[in-house]
Length: 114
Ligand SMILES: [Zn+2]
Image (cartoon, rainbow, N blue to C red; front, side, top):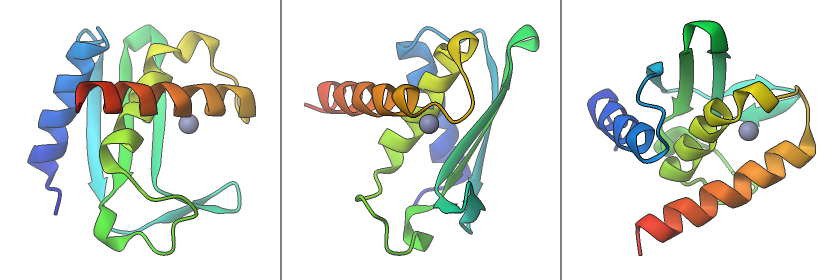
């Protein structure tokens, strides 16, 4: 079971690894899934580049129902943090961006946890 405290600790660790310690990131562990683009979402980020502020919402794994792909909490968190890294290049609904970020988050999490 993830707690707000554990989430923040892991988030700060990954901010350091990704060299985005200068961003003020609010981490929010949520206990219910929400609908985004007509799909059940498990994580979401919103950022203000000029203020170097971001807000990451992420679902507690125990409440995730029938995920299409296995839901990996750390990978979901790194995925959202990579959006912060690439925020200047971000465009809404960009599938190529999502696929690239998914692959990178997978490689990074697997690499660090080897
Ligand atoms: Zn994404």
